[in-house]
Image (cartoon, rainbow, N blue to C red; front, top):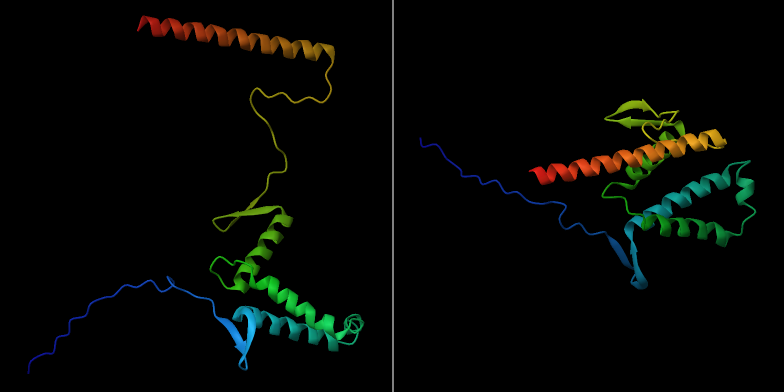
Amino acid sequence: MQEHKTNHTALHVLNDYLKFEKKIYQVFGVPLGRPIAFKAVGYFIVIFLIEMLIYITPVIGNVLKLFPFVILIAIPIGLAYLLADVQTEGRSSVAFFRSVLLYVWRKQQKVTYIRDRLLPKPKVHQIKGYSIVTTTQSQAEKGRIQELYRLKKQQAKRNKRLNKKRKKDK
């Protein structure tokens, strides 16, 4: 029997090239004034459920029971509206906010990570070289500093003259 050969060609495609956000344009046939991102509706539902869980808790719920019902609905709507516009750099919202919280936590811990290795931040900073930092100067210190600057200027002039002579000799 003859063996059946198939010619396969590998097709390479860009999956994330055209990625559109899902939006809701109408509810039960009633058009909305503007499109609402599906992500915003998800945020609203999650925040509303969390708010209702807090509302029915015995001690903490007493604070929410002081607000009128309209405010209790407006809080998830406002938070969902604000969260829907957050640019998450192509990641899921949970991963994005997790990285933001880890960044804030690491900053407060005074540590940094390089290639997943923990490095403590330096506690003492030193300036090396010609920099001189003083808070109060006596007359003797001022004279010594002025002498240093004068010597540096003289040396710079000498070096400039030597460089000019070397260029002429070439």
